[in-house]
Amino acid sequence: MENPSSQDPLQGQVGGISAESELSALADRLVRSNKICRLLCRSQSLSPKYPDIIDRVRQQLLVELELQTTPTHNGSNQEGELWLNETLDRVCRQVFDDAALTWLAIVAQQQPPETRLRKEALTILIQTIEFSGKLGRSSGSESQQIVQETLSYVVEKIDRYKPSKGSLMAWALDAKKRIRRHVRASAEVSDMQQSAQAKRIKLKSQLKGLVKKARHFDLWFWLSLEIKGLLPKQQSVQQISLVSLVLALMLLLLDQEPVKANDLLTHIAYECFPLAFRVEESFGEALSIDEVTQHESLLLSELVKEYIHEDPEGLCQEAMQACTQATFRVIALDRLDGRNWEEISTRLGGIPTSSLCGFYTKWLRNLAPRIKAYIQQNH
Image (tube, rainbow, N blue to C red; front, side, top):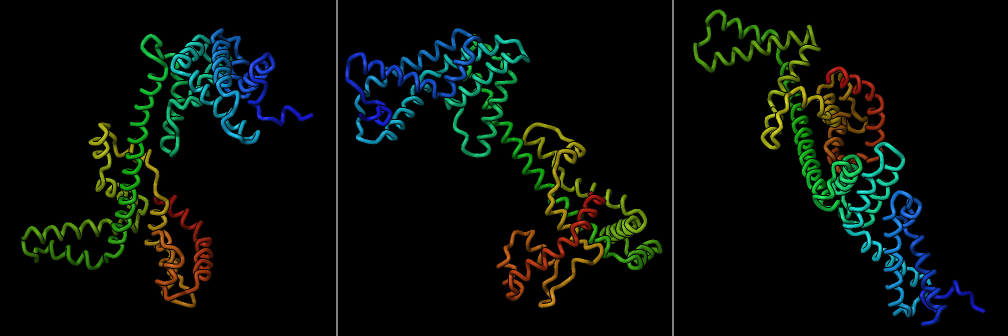
């Protein structure tokens, strides 16, 4: 005798008590297999509405199964189960409509705050919203973040929802629109912050390099000519003298108080790229320099570039034996600019990529503590 479980789950006697019993048992099994229905069943003491929702799913399933007592396909039991699961999902989404979700929200509001019952009701509500797909499918990272933040908003602000003013999903979708604007505005601000910070770091490095290239004797000689009145009284000449004075003072400050000199150069770089004004113009939010520096994450690659350009101890000029042009500085800057090993090899005359990689890794390991100390001291 053939085992009934191996047959197509939709097959049985057409008409009669046996077929009806099989369909009823099949509907019960399908209802039990749905996660939301199981949650509603376990928590039915919270509200008499929960069993009503389960019964609606079961009744609608019976209608669907009665219409399909003879499957249109000639497939296997696996194909039959696939059809059953698809039917179950479709029926559940029909039952978990806006009215049902609104009732679930009301049940959650009725539970005392900060209690197990409130948490239990909110869990059912959130999982039902996710299952229904009414918030949209979170395919990309941004949309996933928006959906998750919207669900968090529903949990945290559920008491603000007023059923008399509309359905739960209308309220949730309105919150989603606000959250989307906030997420996109924050991402744009973050991009602006990173771009401005990269420019500041580069400018600061260039300013420090300019000061270090200046020589005391040349600067004071120029200024002595100004003091003696030997230079023409022209505006352009006076501006050159002023620049010479600033360079001379910065050079003294770097020699005598390097920490203060570094802070001054940082401030100059920030003043040259006033991000706060652009943020205020774009989003209507006034930010001070201090607020921007507190919330802005520094670009590590730019800080490492600054160290390599500065090369305070002259260690970045170490070259490979096979090629004196292949210094750690050249290789590291190429890597930081996104070039792969094949491109660097071609630029340096065909040095094997394994040799380049080994040399770079060795020196990076040696310099890592010095780079870290430099960044901590200067930033």
